[in-house]
Length: 204
Image 1 (cartoon, one colour):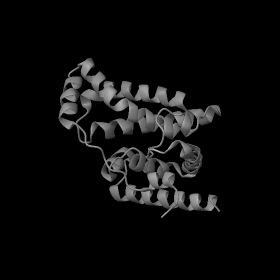
Image 2 (cartoon, helix red, strand yellow):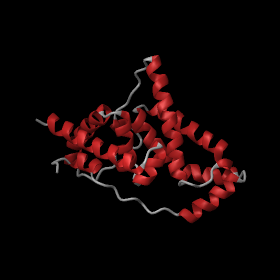
Image 3 (tube, helix red, strand yellow):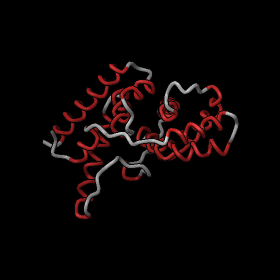
Image 4 (tube, one colour):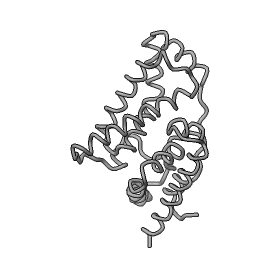
């Protein structure tokens, strides 16, 4: 147990929101048949969360915006071959994650330093509503949490982000990560333990 609502918001299991699967299925089938308007509906449905994931992963809003756009372009091109073995959102996260990794490698090779903090992103970490007098303390904790996440190994950080921040089930995370469910659960557990240990040591 921790005394910080910020770290608790990330470490505690997140409830998955109910989705209107019937409407998505209808639009998906239409999009696969070439209906651009139907695909636009799908983009509108998923772009906010996908952009938020890319922002948090890359820590650069400009790169995240380009990656998110590229992800939907690739999704449109590959949509006729999408067989629905995984949820559409899971498939989109997989595409976005691969593009994020490619962008990070390219950025590292260019030694580019164009990062933002979580507070500058359009999709911040999920958090409870705080009264005005608590906002400064909350922002400080968010900045600390950002530093802790950045220190985690990429595989552990990504698994934790997909599970705790994006609300994916362990089965969905495993598909995105191309890993077994048991392996995914292990990554999430280790990420939580490492982050919690770092958090407590930083507070000493």
